[in-house]
Each structure stands twice: as C-alpha cells, then as structure tokens.
Image (cartoon, rainbow, N blue to C red; front, side, top):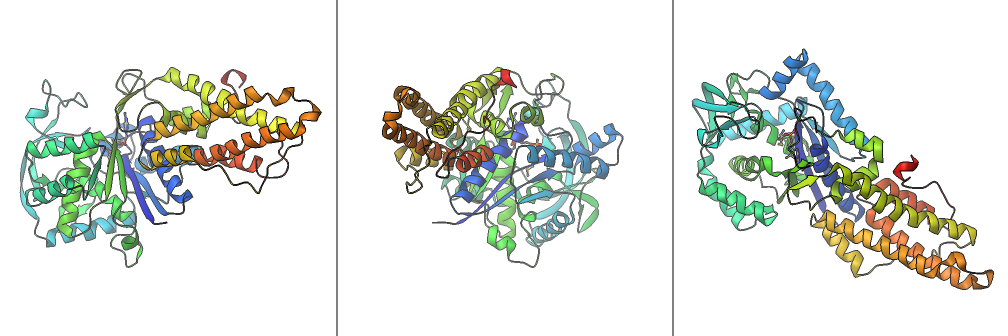
Length: 478
Ligand code: ME8
C-alpha cells in the first residue's frame, strides 16, 4: 500500500564546507527516499543548512566576510556536493531564508502563548563549537571534550522554555514507542539522560547578533538550536496558508548521528508538545565514525571531502562505498584503503564484470531478453528490501553482492563461451538466466546506485542486448 513518507537529515552548519560525515547521513536519507519512491510512496525529502548562531558568525569573521555573504557561499558548496552525489531532495531549507524566518515567528509566538516561556538570567558556560550550554560536570580538564576548547563564561538575560513541564510526557512517549528512537541502544541512551535530570533551556540569546530576533523582544535572538529544529516544519510550509504542512507533518523519520540526539529526542518533542503539534514518528540515530582510527578533524588534516571521492570513484560507487563500510547504526571506522579494495572487488570485478561479460556473450550469440519473463522475485529479494526499509544498509549491500557472486559463479560453471553453435538452446537458457539475475540486481541497487541501475535496466531491456562501456573501470585502468 502506498503512503506518504517524510524524511529529513540534520541541517548542517555552514561554518565550513561539507565533509564525509555530512555525506554519510545525506546519502543514507537519499537511499531511503529513493527506496520509498520506487515502491510507490509519496515522498518528501528535506535537507538544508543551519546558518545562524555564534559559530557561523565567528567563521564569517575569520573569512573576512559579512555573515550573509559567507553563508551564501558555503550553502552553495553543500548544494554542489549533493548534486555530485546525486542526492534527490525535495527541498533544501536554509535558515536565512524568508520562509524559515516566517515559520519560526509563528512557532515562537505559539510557544509564548502556551505559557511555556519565561524570562530569567543565564549564568554559566557555553561551548560555541557545540552551540550549547555546558555544565562543569561535562568538562574534561576544564575543556569541552568534543572541541577540546575552554567554553565561554556567559552572563545574560535569556528567555527559557519550561522543559520540565513536558519531560514526563516525552519520556512516556519514548518508553511506549509512540515516538520511536532507533536503534534500541540509542533509546536506552536517551532514557538514561532523563535519569540524570533535565533543566529548562534557553530559547533566546542576548549577545549573539547573527540570528532571528525574538518577535516579542527584539533585543534577543532565538537560540540557534531552537531555531534550527524548526527547519523540519518550516521546510514543508509551516505557518503558511496551504495544505502542504498538514499533508507532510509529522515526519516519518529524522536521521542524524548521536552527537545531536538530545536535541532531537528530548528538546524537539517537548517544543512540539507545547505548541500542540504531533511528534515525529521515528528517529534513527546512526553511528559516528573515525577515519583510520582517528577523530576526523581539520587540525589532524584527515577530513575527507565527498567531492574528492566522487572524482575518484563516481557518484554511485561513492554512495556504495560509504554505506557498505560498517553497520549503519553503529560507530565505525572509515578505512581509506578499503575504498580502493572494495571498489575493485565488489564493483569492478563483481557487478561490472558480470554485466559486461553477460552483455558481450548475449551480443555475440545473438541472445536477447525474454520480455515476457517477470523479474525474479524470491525470499532473498524480500529480505534485502526489508533490510533497506529497516536501515540495515550494509546487510542489504552484502546480500546484493551475494547475488552478484552467485551469478558470476554460475556463469563460470556454465562457461557459455565454450559452447559450440550446436549448443545454441543451452547458451540461450544460461544467458537468459543470468540476465534475469542482472535485472533483479538492477532493481535492488536502485536506491544505492541509481545511475548504474538505470544503465543496466536499459541495456537489458529488449530483444537484443549490446555490449557497452564498462560500468566500473578498474582503478588501475583509469
Ligand atoms: O549538528 N560520523 O550540524 P553539523 C557520522 N546544525 N556522521 C557525522 C560525522 C561523523 N564523524 N560528522 C558529522 C549540527 N556527521 C546542527 C544540526 S539539525 C536541526 C541541526 C553528520 O554540521 C551527522 O548526521 O555539526 C551529524 O549528526 C551531523 O553531521 C552534524 O552536523
């Protein structure tokens, strides 16, 4: 049965250009969006950029640019990276856009009207890198453990959100599974956070000048996280006089990594409860990865630019390589050397070789596709589809690779290249069997490798099959 499916990625900070971490989440969301579209669901896929706040403003100063000019440039880099990776989003929301501004105004006024905002003083620590208030307890040797920097001491008037009024309700919704936090370990992690106790949080900042002013006190700007979370509704028309918002909200899935779990699993639902909007149905928190065993950082110089991967391997292969390295829900290590190895073994020697030698043999022996035959459907295909639907991308890709290997093995065993003209009937059967597998593989890889999928489907469509350029040239041949 077809249904609506609304999926989001985090909106990424534009303090710097996109890296492989952003690409990882965005490719995963694109795979899900494509998978749902392909099975007939009506899909809305939202991504975008988080452009306000102290961190972005500081980066603009470092770049010697006005903030708006700076964010325009960096936001463009994200769009380019997503184009290179063949990401098919339905909207790219920017928090400096008028539609976001308008929606945030409506939301904040509703929050105020719900009596869940009050004025107070904040005196404490703030980590600009995390864009969050941080407690003494969280520091390691006086520094933020994520950014290894001393937080700023701040003392200012803030408006606060009465998180404590909603906390029991949020907890109950998570415990009961009405709002799913996946995988299970992350749900446990969130429930653990409730145990540590939770305080009201600021919704505005007095001293941060790069942001959206609070409608009822223009001397304050809305706290960047509170404003950023609202992209999930501003990106689908919240506060506009149209049906669009009610059509798509609530989100079917928010995807992110564990670094921003608390904001999404606790703060965001609480804010939505306060204004009376339904909560996202599901949030999937994938792992955080290191590069060759080290944290990815500018100072270590190990940050991988997704455009470099696309230049090296092409967009489809990059998508495959990103999602096949380690299980999606777990922390992992990205090994640079594995990219070349897996490209050659799985794609060049695996899929590419299967397709090219089959097409060659079909052309040479004048064997075409039996168009009356339906693509193979069996348990393996069903299992792979279930795995994709449930975020088990690496398992799905392993399963697909299993089919590729099986087809290659069958071809080796049957060795139709050794057949004589008298074996024509046998040759036809063997090649049509393999081409059935190839068509099934083309279907299955579609969400991961859409270009390759279409090329194969077109090549293996009609009564005559022609050989074409190789799909994945071996790296040494490039
Ligand atoms: O947090 N491994 O933006 P951000 C896996 N603007 N994923 C990674 C990663 C890694 N090493 N590094 C980054 C923000 N990511 C806020 C979000 S949403 C309302 C506001 C991915 O640019 C992962 O999805 O720091 C992570 O959650 C996100 O980038 C953080 O992006």
